[in-house]
Length: 216
Length: 98
Image 1 (cartoon, chains in turn yellow, blue):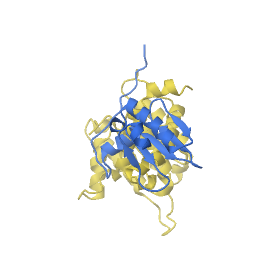
Image 2 (cartoon, helix red, strand yellow; image 1 turned 120 degrees about the vertical axis):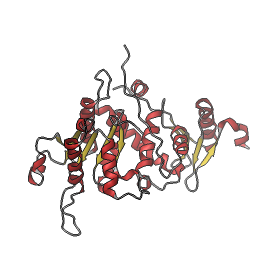
Image 3 (spheres, chains in turn red, purple; image 1 turned 90 degrees about the vertical axis):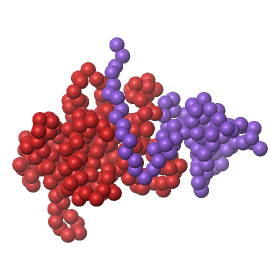
Image 4 (cartoon, one colour; image 1 turned 60 degrees about the vertical axis):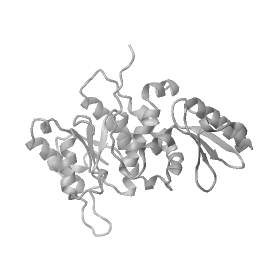
């Protein structure tokens, strides 16, 4: 498995409406040279969900926490609290953990930059950005954060607009890729397979070569 | 001095799909049925190719040429039904025309 320093825990909703943002987050993490992990990567484990989350959070130095869907559920009128809970677990690991855990860094995303003050004001002081519910700003925010979080400052990370162009190209290729893989559409892709597809696509489209073929 | 980029991070995690199938699909030369009776030859990496042909035969011949050069499979997407895989190393354009 990738190292602690390279691993990024993605804490976000897993519903269909969020899927475009989730896919964009996985792509930008990998295009910046990190590795995306989330609670959906093991669905055959006997562990309870919370145990699985503890294990993944322990293995990741970096965390992206999208709390934009902390809102009342249309069916039962109750708030969705999984994302703030997992953010709390991440912050707790950083506060109470060993020296490695104390190196944890997180990025909090929401629809609007100050919305959290109305429902989770205790997180004031964390690194919070808005993505306007759109993949392009989400990619730009995460790219900038990963650029600052990487240990070697001499290493280049492509700009947010380059990553977004690459992401659009990848998305345009997805329907062509799904059919030979026996999938009726990209909605059939589970997290691990989507991540493997992103990695294979990036291997075939290495950045240096891609920039030569797709000048700005 | 050339720019230094971060290396891609990979894992051996397995999902529902075979990793070799994913790799083959990304590397492949795809031949897609298009509108009318046209066919499109498309690659998804490196020097990208997207060429349109008036017949499947022409499209296949071109795809096999590209596939042999890149050592990649050719995947033919008919309008309906399963995708056909062709290994250019074991195929000649004459055989395909027959």
